[in-house]
Amino acid sequence: MTVRFIPHSAIDQKLLIKIIEVKMKSWPYSIEEQLKWIEKNIDDNDVHVLLIDSKDNILAYLNLIEIETTINNVKCLAVGIGNVCAVEKGKGYGSTLIRKTNDYLTENKKTGFLFCNNQLLPFYQALNWEIVPQGSYTIDGIEPKTNVMGFNLRLNIKTMNYHGKIF
Ligand SMILES: CC(C)(COP(=O)(O)OP(=O)(O)OC[C@H]1O[C@@H](n2cnc3c(N)ncnc32)[C@H](O)[C@@H]1OP(=O)(O)O)[C@@H](O)C(=O)NCCC(=O)NCCS
Image (cartoon, rainbow, N blue to C red; front, top):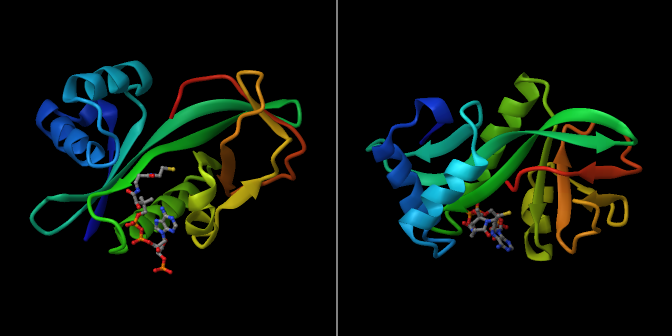
């Protein structure tokens, strides 16, 4: 298995459809709806991360989005991790993909954030992601129900406010 990091600007339509087919196993939106979502939310510099097998089949996928967020009243650049999905669950594909993404974030000295439900907290915690304490963050000015997790957090987050693209 290999992990590829591909900027959106370098993705052709054929590969985009292959990615969408994997995403559709987790989120049942049509190809057209998925294409519209990507067009609206993914910029040319954002990165698609693919775990592939020896025959180039995609086993797991996520995307990395450049985001700006305000932490302890200071604007910071970070990376938003979204659309994490595996073609088959429970085979280690998701954790392999996250481990490689962690390496990428560390090598590039970047902090990552993701949103997830309660059920997935242990999955990400086992992969060294930390929970950002509930009550300390807002998204578009509202305290969301979803959890926020971070990787390579370099400071103690007292407050975090995010206004930006969905990822
Ligand atoms: C979440 C997801 C990417 C995990 O990938 P995966 O390939 O199934 O995970 P792995 O096989 O690497 O599992 C690693 C461990 O996490 C656990 N785990 C995986 N998904 C879990 C879940 N939804 N709830 C609880 N535990 C989970 C596994 O049981 C396994 O534990 P073990 O090592 O003790 O056996 C995958 O289940 C998926 O595609 N889910 C649907 C889409 C989704 O909800 N994405 C999350 C967006 S934040």
